[in-house]
Amino acid sequence: MDFDRVLLELGIAKRTELKKEFKGLKKMVNPLMLIQLPNDDKKLIDMGEKTKEQIVLEHLAQNGISDDKIALWFDGKQKNMEFISENDSEQEYMLFKQAAGTGWDCPRAHVLVMFREIVSTIPYTQTIGRILRMPEPDKKDDYIDTPELRTGFLYTNYNRSDVQIPDESEKNKPRNLEAKIKAGINNIKIQSAYISRTDFGDLADSSKFQASFIQSMNRYFKIDDDDVMGKGRTKLINAGIELNPKITNQIVVDAQFKDIDQLGYDFQRLGQDVKIEISNNDTEKTFNYILFNILKEQTDEDAKVGNLSRSWGPLKSAIRIWMKRALSESESIRLYKIFINDISKGASSKFRPAITSALKEYRPILTKILADKAKNKERREVLMFSIKPFYYFTDDYADVPQSLCALDKFYIRKKYDGRDNELRFKDYIDSKIKHIEWWFKNGDSGKDFFAIRYLNTTTNDYALFYPDWIIHFKDGRIGIFDTKKGDTAIDTEGRAVALANKIKELGKDFVGGIAVFENGVWYYNSSPSYTYSPGKLDKNWKPMENLFNSN
Image 1 (cartoon, rainbow, N blue to C red):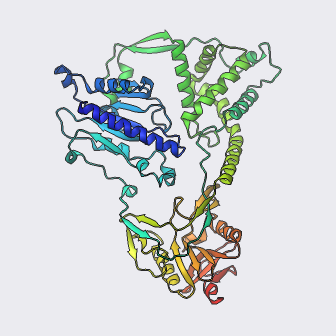
Image 2 (cartoon, rainbow, N blue to C red):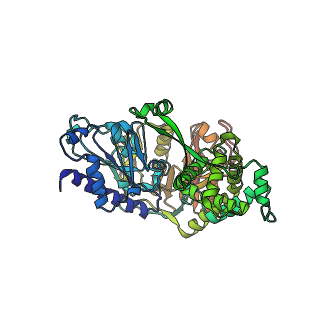
Image 3 (tube, rainbow, N blue to C red):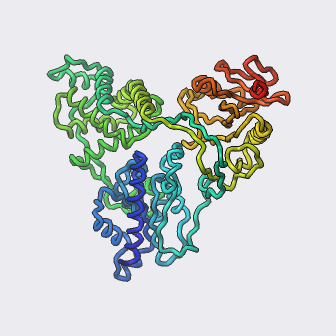
């Protein structure tokens, strides 16, 4: 096997492996393998050899990979590119050249096969950077135990010394620092919280959406169950819907496009316009594309849908069924043409506002569906927190001396707001050697750390809160504290209430709350009626010394 095919085999094998890992996490992510071809492979033709494009497409075909799984992005030639940036897009491979790919990004791209330019020896750093993105950056905690899904894989025939990895953010730093649990530590188990993944950003339940959509559209166009024998048609005609449109497509002929960045301008000024009635196949493709864009263009928060690829299909079915009933028409292509013709009127379209209205009316139903799913999932899956045998840290952390930390080393970030306040608290609890067996500095994300679910009063949505400190008293009590200072103590966005309620729920052996340093003394507040005014602490604020003096 020649080296070109070896690179492809390595890339294909890695993509397949990553796909299995995503599936194991129940993630709707289809990893994409990028294949960057040389810009100058015309020279191969001049030498009577196959181009890299021919070699790659032949090899993919030999591996049983069908054309619909392959996207192409070249100057003047694009194929299967419509929804490729979506995490669950069906395309698994994308062939492109540097010129065509400039400025493009796709976070689900995990594997890059980069063929060396025939003349130039400089690889493209920007291209390499594309495989260093995460498909779900807002759900990075889900990937803590799967390092390969946080890694980009490059296979190339460039020399290693020629490859320059772009400077990415802190998240890609190696975790070289290790801390391990001290011998003899009396570990704990506390039920922790998590936000279960039930919302995939789609319409959730296609049958319920379909029923809601049909009712909404009927209401919008004043169609009821008695509108049979053409009455529905009459109402749509009266609303301004044209029922016998002729759909044509303006095709640009005799035009050559040389610069991808000037394509919009060239498209307008080059070639001749020819009007041709579009085929049935093109009609359905156009209908599909319009639905995708209708979902994409929604600006009303209650009408927005996050995962377009998972949503346009149910929307297509709902529209088709509603139109068939309203128009007593069985031929889908005729319905598609009616729809396309109306949508092509832009802001004058009658269907556009009706669809927005239907999406908004479905929102309360969708919210309830997701809430019920979350409750059921959390009932089935219980997450318990215990101190792990090992923890790893990046080099932006520093080892700080400690006495009672549950780990043999106490690593804390070198710079961040609140660092001095937390070190002051660490010194305070370290001094309580007669009363405290150990303390643990909690992390701020991920299932490895203790979390409390709370209602964020700013966003009015549920989120996770990670209290700063867990303390094991020698008398068996467990303390859960979150240190605050200044504005962060004034507005806790619901965290203080959630912490107070959690401590009460856990029972008499648990103490804690929000902790602040006032007048040279640490105070804590465990009241659900939480308030904080600097210099004016109410009766709910109690000196932490009380927790030690009472025993």
